[in-house]
Length: 472
Image (cartoon, rainbow, N blue to C red; front, side, top):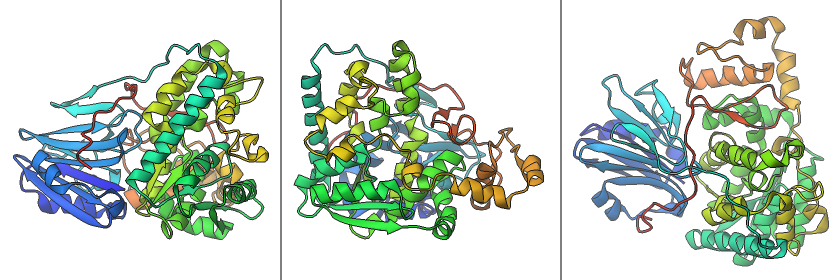
């Protein structure tokens, strides 16, 4: 994991060091600050992703590069800064402007708050160059392949195997977050042959279905399994840290991050990197609401929810892993896997009422039947959280207080007492920020499917590799 930061001003080493100090947990093992003409850049890194410092200093570049297709980078060029973010926004990147109009950037919002309140998220697949944001690609639906389902399943399996193997080439000690769902179980099963000992990790309330299915998978693949049992008091104690790292008070995002944060903390005691199953539902139509969509509209909907991952599920994955200095590989969002998934006919994604049918075919020999055929459970449901935090908020926040405080300074209306409960903690960390346009937010009240409301139209990319492979 890596933290990057910088400002388009010369001789600001002290400023950049302070920016990085806010995010040291992302890269606790090393730091470099680069001063080029009119620009100061910096980076913290972990040993998992030790960069080629000499090359970076020569090129005036800092980068958070998870792998070839997932990255955020900044480069000094003729006294200016060029920012680039990967096609799906797996790696985070924010920018803003000081009172004097100087561009500044950081991996997380907290790296910018001492310099500016004028903060923006750099959209996926976008560059900041010559004073403006420029999309370099768009994510769009593709013409379906006419290949048979058997051939498509075989090709999908090969591409998944390839991305897992490449991750082990970057970090030989990889574990796997394991909820016992189809996606995380697939990643763990594919990873097992590459590790002498594969550590897998699950967390949940006692009796949670995720714990049950994770044990089945761990026994089946022969992993060294670690399980964390959590109660409501432990969840509440972790909540301020979760919101601090997540930089959000969105109810569904916070709720889904609680167990993810705790299981990431557990994993960090054993491995520097993990596999996450994020992205499988969006690529292969895993959400129940998709079954009710007109088949003619399904491709557009899948492209839409893939494009919205960057400040929803991918933000959760990045912040939960980064909080503990670990790297999370999201194999389903490998460029080759996504390119293929977009070309798989929808009839193979939703087949006879079965979601993610083609993925199930691709890994049928890897997983036990109970897991292979398990229905989708939201992260916070499978872990047993359900509406526990919503109930807690309703018990501790009066109707009068909620009615008085639910309209925020920027005009947003909080959807529930649960969200207001999270906002109060957010405000303790970050103050009463008047501009929250950089934050993704769920439409409607908790309980709906996660579909993020963007604050401005942005262009989303198709997948491409643009990073110089020699930097890391």
